[in-house]
Every structure is written in structure tokens, then in C-alpha cells.
Amino acid sequence: MQLSAEHLSLRYNGEDIVHDISLDLEGGELVAIVGPNGSGKTTLLRGLARLLKPTGGYVLLDGKEIRSISSRGVARNLAVLPQEHPEEVDITVSELVWRGRAPHQGVFQRATSADHEAVVWALEAADVRYLASRSLGSLSGGERQRAWIALALAQQPRVLLLDEPTSFLDVQHQVEVMALLSRLNTEGMTIIAVLHDLSLAGRFMRRVIGMSDGRVAFDGIPREVLRPEALQAVFRVPMVILEDPETGLPVPLPRDPGAMLKD
Image 1 (cartoon, rainbow, N blue to C red):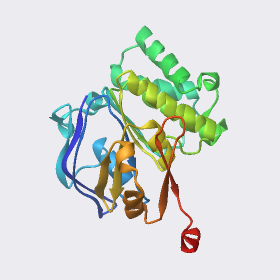
Image 2 (cartoon, one colour; image 1 turned 45 degrees about the vertical axis):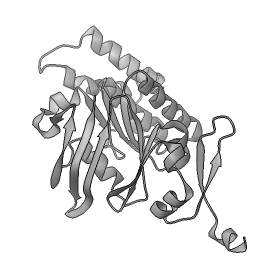
Image 3 (cartoon, helix red, strand yellow; image 1 turned 60 degrees about the vertical axis):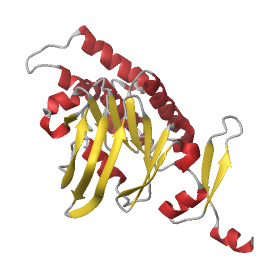
Image 4 (cartoon, one colour; image 1 turned 180 degrees about the vertical axis):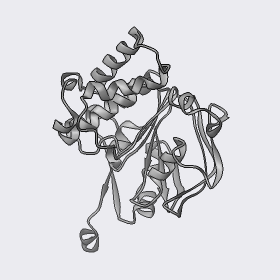
């Protein structure tokens, strides 16, 4: 399922953030959006998810303008996991994940075997089945993040948008979440994730879009775009690119400006 932006401009809190962006995100892609704070990453993601009304241009979901599709119709095909979640301390993980089935149910429709299977799959995929009876308020930050990922997966979307999905996670769970996204992608799901960690973007993603001042600064496969000059222009800090000895993939690291002066 294709997701496209055509000359998309977006405003947030009364400020113009995203300026005239055009992108084609093809079905089956695995894409990272990177950039410094304030570059427009999250605003762009929210615009693609129909959470913000464009001030210019439009978003297309499988060739149809996304704002012309009903909310239920969008939710059956596209799920979004924001960085910040509502406080839901009094419900269990299982109850939260069941909410992901709402787009697939009628108002008075009872849960079906397909609903049960989807919820169990989502709990297992996000590694939170053992937490199913726990309340959200009793979980650690990492456990709570994985519970919200399970909610998005329970929708069984064809396109999954995530804003900082590895936030609050330790290294083990960061890798597990990224491996999960990779597996979902190999099974046909289109995944677009805002990431702060450039090493995760280089290691796991197949396409990296760099944002700077509300515009696309670079866009391509990691080996081509994760270059010192391009990253320094976007992040305004000297960068060095190491090579993963096993995969040959780029591992971007910030350089110590003080050490550079001694070179």
C-alpha cells in the first residue's frame, strides 16, 4: 500500500513546520525519518497519518486523498504510534490491545475468533503477553511502550507509522523492537519510523529520510546518505561513519570537536 505526500506543508501550534515536501513511500518499504529536534520529523509523521490538516498540498493513501477516507477506513489500513500516549493507568495491557480491534468491529458486533487471534498475535509479537493482566500504571517505561506497540499491531495495518518506537527501552528491547519491525516488513507491512538513533537507522532500515528545517535534506539507502558531510549539515555536529564488520552497514557516530582541533 503506497503512502505519498504531494507538496505537503504543515503547521503545528500556529507555526509553519513542514514546507512543500513531496515523497513517495511505496508498499513494503522500511523507512526511517531522522533529524534534530525541531526539524519537522514528528510533524511530518502526523501529517502522513492524517492527524494534522495540511496548510498546503495533500497526502494520498493508495492513490486516494487520505482526508477523503473515513477514519475507520484509514484505521483499517494505517496505524500510528505516537511518542506520547494518554495516561491509561487503570486498564490492563490486554484491554489496551483489544482497543486496536475497534476499526474492524461494528458498534454492536461481538469479538470474533479473528479478533482473538489478532490480539494474541500482537501481544506475542510485542513481547507483552506475560503482562496481559497487568495494569499500565504498574509497568516500566519500556514495558508500557511495548504495550502500545501491541495496540498498533492489533489493528493489523498494512502501513505502520511510529514516532520514536525505541524510546524508554534498554538496548536489548531496542534491538528486539527493531528486529520485530524488520520481520513485519518482510511479511509485507510498510513501516515508517521516526528515529533519533542513527545507528539503529543504519543497521535496520532500508531507506533513510533526513529532515532539516522542515524540508527533506537527504533521502536514500543508508550506505548512500549516511555520510559525514550530509549528517553534519543536518545535525550541525561533526560526524564519523564506521562500518559494521559483519554487515558492512554504516554506523554514524558524533565526533568530539575538541579532538578534531588536535588532529
